[in-house]
Amino acid sequence: MHRFRQVTRRLLGCLVLGLAGCVGPDAPPVLVRSVYVQEAIGAPSPALALCGDVIHDTSVRVLQSRGYVAATEPAGADAILYAAWYARPVSAGIPVGKVSLRLTLVDRSGRVLGSFLVISDAQASLLSKERIADLVREGVGMLGR
Image (cartoon, rainbow, N blue to C red; front, top):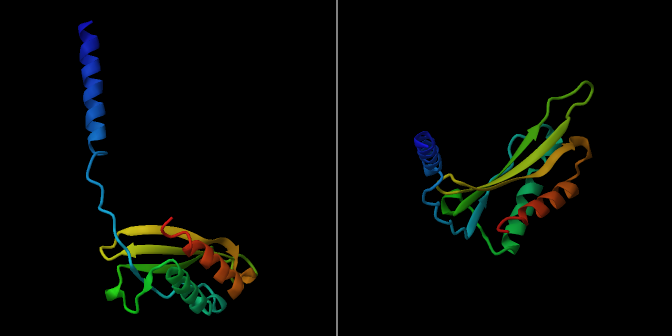
């Protein structure tokens, strides 16, 4: 019976020590009123590089329709929306393979407020400016929900 108490105490002690790191102050919520939309980076092809304006303009319009102010300079914004293209390695005979577009919202301190894939493993040759605009509109519309 004496050993049972020792084992129980040790297990409870380990449990308390293990959970001690889980308890802590939460980061205060960030009030975001203005967002600077950064130009998209990392386009794997010239055709997708030309879509940078579509990504930027669509993001700004959606943010403004959701009540955010589109900041003209990063210094005057509460947060920055980054857009980055990612491409899978090129396979034989295909100049550009599958691509993804990730949007990331970061506050002034560098804390990530949201990150999501707008385009996930899509065939680059099948993406038109209209399709990209639709996908960005849908993805940016998810902010704040």
